[in-house]
Image (cartoon, rainbow, N blue to C red; front, side):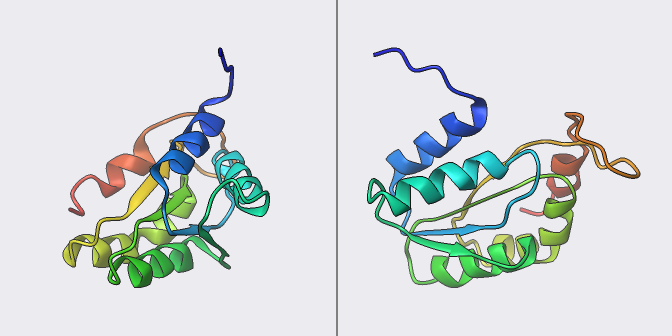
Length: 129
């Protein structure tokens, strides 16, 4: 069967197929659709995962670190300023070699509100490990 979806919905479907045990989620444009779709999978029972709606991107990565050290599969998603807010915890995860899967939907960091695609958010994290 042919399925047409946005890139975000395709990521959510791939996450569902990967069967993570923990998904820590905080919405930020333009990745919000990923965590919304995952929340729908979990609420319908199509995905058996602990869905944690956290209060910030920093907390999302902290929750993934906590779950990851127990050996379970973890997932989170972010974008732009959310990734920058998560930066401290990304370094902790990398330093501890905790395998966490994260989708980053690239978005410009520029001043003010900017939703244009750009890679400066990812490039900031390139050398964190």
